[in-house]
Length: 123
Image 1 (tube, rainbow, N blue to C red):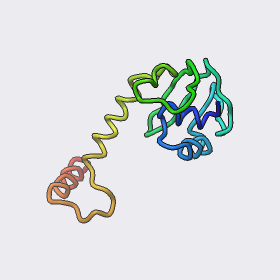
Image 2: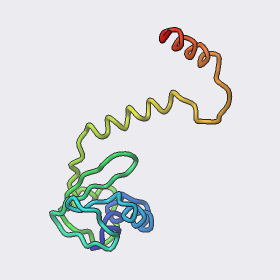
Image 3: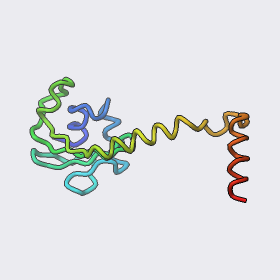
Image 4: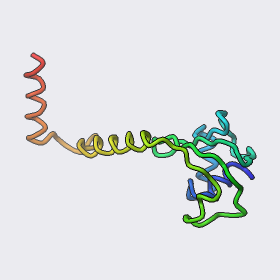
């Protein structure tokens, strides 16, 4: 089975074209090597998929006949992603929530006070 079809079947990507684009960008590795979308995968292959700033690591246990339901995904893969990767994602989320997006306006009164306090500490 092609790698892009497998990733679509086990619900890592919503469409096959998104899975194909991820393979072309180099976000998918099979046994440590960057994989083209047309690369065939077999049971016992190790995949590394970079998605949402997390390196998901999984081992193929079987090939699905077609796209499977969310409850049946664990039959076809073994997820070996370390928990530290998800914890780092949570920290990134919290740090992004604090800051406003670039270009959303002038600093608030609190932002100005924080900047002044920071300047005073450095001097």
